[in-house]
Image (cartoon, rainbow, N blue to C red; front, top):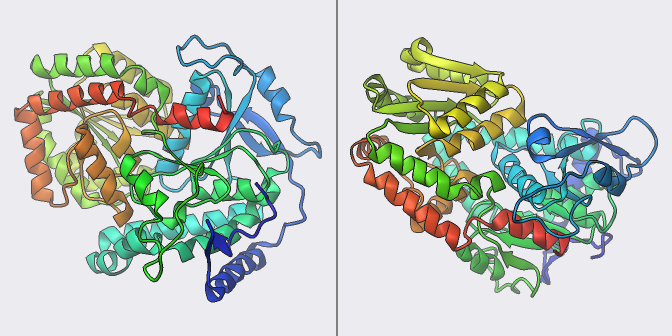
Length: 507
């Protein structure tokens, strides 16, 4: 891989027109002018412990160093290597690093990153968290933060204005990001992130869970870059030529291979041999290795007459407020009669919880709040695996790692996850799939429905509420999904994170 190649002018041998290329170059110049051009800067990194997942998954966090000395990543990994007794352990992996390059854009990309770190740790590697948006003084980080703010704003507006959603947001997320021409600007902008890679060895295994870190790693000359593509809808947005692209589903594999629909005006060259791999769903080791145990416990509780445990995870944008309020109102009578238990995780957005309580006053009056106490959340989730859980429990933590990982813990002891078809679509837990936020998410629900571990996407509130009633009265529906989850595990459908790490490390 040639880190000096101009990857904005041609993508897999498909030439980008001059006008689009010039716009891409202009985009990079605008960001450099706005945030300062640090192309000649030398940034050094240091590694430190991460909250929550540092202890649980052995993850080290890469942050800006104050001293003018490069990080010896291999030495740091050897120093912090720990033995593991899982059956997935790779011989010779102990003491070797795997870098997980990511950005926070909603919770989805962080969730994928945690799955990769979990798999790497289970296989014996030392995972390193490399959030390109976290280096506030760097031009590339400021560029990413500004783009993320725009995306979050669009997500919120799409849920408040049906006209905006129909005329702009849905088309942008399904067709706009799909165009091959869109990739050119991202490739140019990703060049701004290259200075952050100075301390990373060229041959370090690197997993990008968003395309920008993957593109930047290739531009920086890294040679073992795996671009872990999210969702289930092929879009040129996610292409990082020079990396190995991985996808979670067979349909995504075929779509990406053909660059399907990425330029309506011409026939495109397909992705070349060796640039694309189907892996299966990106799921954390802790969830995968406990699938049979957790599904057996669900069926025992449900078919034995216990309350249905509902987990509602509200996205970072706080979208779909009215729908969540309607869902909670529907569940409250079941909670009062001990036919349901409700877990609500609002992540690190306390304002979302306050808004829900305003819409549903009974929440404030009856919920047990686990705010800012991850240890308490972990105890509750662990106790609920075999013990009882009743009433309403709310979770919120200003620490993003606690906020995201809390849902991982709660999934194991929950019976139904209520979620839009985001990255949760691919997780081994029965799911009620509500309306998407962005057209690119639609095929996530299709995948869940076909695997049989989730419903089809339900975009009508009355139909969502009717499905809640069906789950409450016909527990066999959830048991059916549990059986499908166990079958999917046997088929290796949830092994994607292990496969990605294996590809990055050539193990």
